[in-house]
Length: 146
Image 1 (spheres, rainbow, N blue to C red):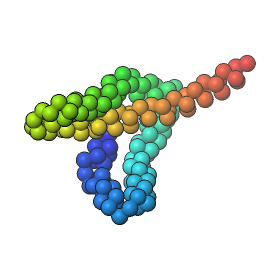
Image 2 (image 1 turned 30 degrees about the vertical axis):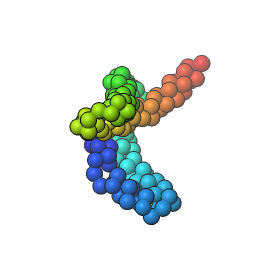
Image 3 (image 1 turned 60 degrees about the vertical axis):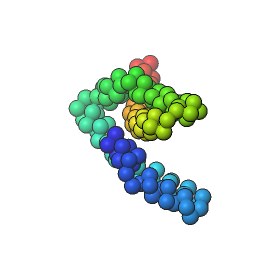
Image 4 (image 1 turned 90 degrees about the horizontal axis):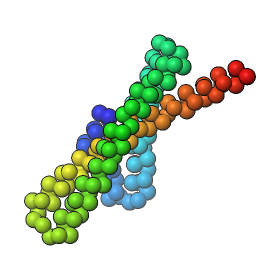
């Protein structure tokens, strides 16, 4: 989550915006490279989590790790819903001709909504990467019992 917040607030996003000035191809290549760079830490974090949970309790540990992360899905989905709501509020304020001060506030809320949506998606992706591992193991155990 720290990496996601860093990538959204700091220079990488500005670097992509600067790459847009030289052309579409540069923007696509730079954005793709930045996307590949942004998944390095989450991949290692998931790998370490799988290793530790497997070392402690074998496949049961991996299943418990997945269920632990799955318990945050309701919060993640509600965080995900905040982004479009705040974006719509900004659009309504603009169309209604409200003061510039109100539009600045809704823009700040929209930025917060985009950040929380990105963080929520990272958590959801982590969960859905561990669940197939558990499902495959359960199938293998069930086939072995026949």
